[in-house]
Image (tube, rainbow, N blue to C red):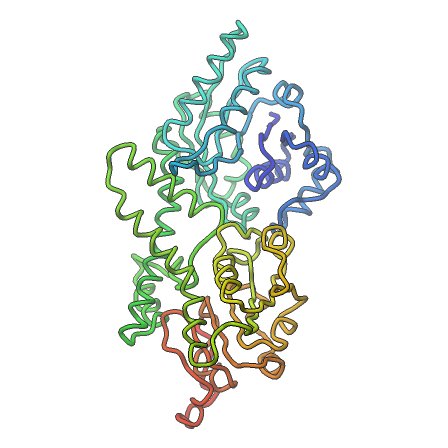
Length: 464
C-alpha cells in the first residue's frame, strides 16, 4: 500500500521518513515549492537526530518522494495522512484552516476508497468535520467513493522523534470502521513485531488523548517548578524532594525536573487548545489555567535572579551576560516558546550585553532576534564566557555537562553561574570559584570553601 503525507513539517517528515524506512512507498506533499525542492536535494529544514540520513537513504532508494501535486499523490495512495499545522487562534482554539484546505484537496482528487488519517493535533470533533468536508466536496463532484477518517495522534518528542516513531510505546487509533481498523493494523504491523501496542478506541477519546497526555506532562513540570519556588522560600532542596517523590513507583522520575519552564510547539499550544475545549463545554479550566500561569512565571525567573544578584553590584546596564542554550530543549533547533527568548528580551531591555551559543539553534535564533550591537553569537562555550559578568545555562545540551570550568572562570570578568536546569552540584560549583544560583536550591557563593573547609570536591557529584 502507498502512503501520502500531507504536510512536511516536523510530524510529516518524521512520519513519512519512518514509514519509508520500514519499506513503504511514501509521498510527502507540501504546497511550499521552495521547501519541496530543498527536500528533493536533501536539505532538511529541521534538526532531528537520525532524520537526515533516513530521508537521504530512502530518497535514494526511491521509497520516499516529495511533491506539490495533489493529483499524483492522492491517486496513488491508499492511505492519506494529514500532518498539517493547527496553530492557536485568537480565541485559543486550534485553527483548522490547513486541515480544511487539505481535506478539500483530497476530495478533489480521490479516485477510490481511501483511509484518511488525521495526525494533526486537533480538538474533539475534527475527524467528523473532515468526514463532512470530504463528503460535501465529493457530492459537488457528483462522485461516490467510500472512505474512512481515522484519528491517529502523534506522540513524538523533539530530539528523539525518530526513535519514538520506530519504537512506539503506544499507537492510539480512533475509528468507526472495521475495514479501516484492519488497514491500520496492517500499516503498523512492522512496528509491532516485539509486542502489540495498538490501542483502538472511539474517535473522540483518541482525539482527546493527545491533549490529555501533553497536559499531564506539562502539569508535572509546572508542579515541580511551583515546588521549587516553595523550596527556595522554605529552605528545602528541590533535588532532594524530587528523589523523595520520584522513588514512589506510583509517581516515577519522568518530567519531575525543576527548571526554566517548558516551551516548544506542543505543550503551550495544546494547553491553550484544551482550555478552549473545556470552555466550549462550560467546564472550569482552573487547573489548566494554573499550569500555564506557573510556566509563564517560571520563564521570568532567570531574569529576576540575575537582576537581584546585580542589584548591589552596579545593576545590569552594561553587564555582559553569556547564555548557553537557545532551543527550548536539547537535541532540537526549535526555539518556539523557548525560555531563552524571554530572558534575552528582558536582558536587552535592561541594557545588558549578550553573548549567545547553542549547538544547533543559532540559525533559527538569528532569524527572530533583533539585530543589536548588544547581542552577539559565539562559536562555543568558552567564547560565551570571555569577558562575561555572568553565565546562564538555559538548555541542558549534553556538551554542557562537562564544561571546562577552570578555563571558563579564568575567561570571565565576573563569577556568577546561573543554572536554569540544575545540572551541577551547588557546593562543587562554589568550590570551583563561582557564585552559583540554581532553581529550587539555596544559592552558594565562592566564599563557601572558607566557611566549610571540611567539604572536599571529591565528596561531591553532579545531581543525576
